[in-house]
Image (cartoon, rainbow over all chains, first blue to last red; front, top):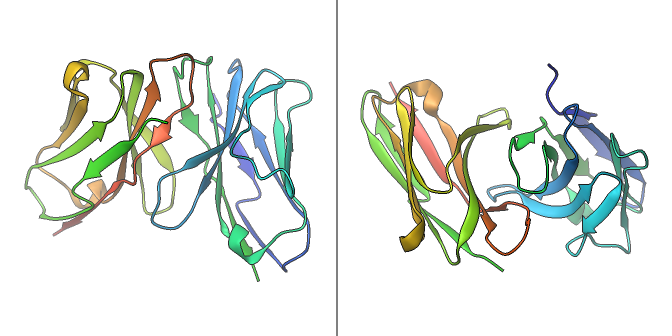
Length: 114
Length: 110
C-alpha cells in the first residue's frame, strides 16, 4: 500500500511568485493535515480536513495561503504570493479519522523562496 | 493550547550506549505519539502510546498520563538511530490534531 504521497519534493521560486503543493493521503484515511516545519523546529499545523471540510484552519495565514480538498481525497496547498519567510518544509499527513489513529506523514516539500 | 516540552534538546551517544528521551505535556491527552525524523526529513511513526508501555525491538516507550510525561528508551544505539525524535500529543478535549514538541536531536557516533 502506498503511503502519503507529496509532490514536488523540492521547489525553488522567486519571491512574489505563486506555488502549489499536492498531497495524496493513504486510501481510506478521512483526515488530512498540512503542517509547516521550520528548520530546527517541530511541525506546526496549518490546516486539518475531515473529508472535504476544513475543520481547523486557525493557523493558516489566509491572506496568502489557501487549501482545498474538493473530493475528500487529495489536497492542494497554495501560496500566493510567496515571501522569503515561507521557506520551509511543508508536510502532509493523514489519519484514519479525527482521533489521529494511523497518523502517517509524507516526505514533504522543501520550499526555498529566493 | 497544550504545551509539549522535550528534553534533552541534543544528545550525542557512542554506538552501543543506551538513552532516555523525555516528553512533558501540559494537559490531559487522548493521543501521544513518538516519531523519528531521519536525516532525509522523513517522519516515521514509532509508537502510538497515550498510556502504558510498549516495546519494539531496541525501542520502548512509557507514558504516565496521570503525571503528564512520556519516556522513549533507546537501547544499544546504532548510527542509524541518528536523527530527531519528536513527541506529539493530542489534547483530551475533542478530536484535536497532534501538537509537536521541538524534538531531541540524537547523534550516534561509531
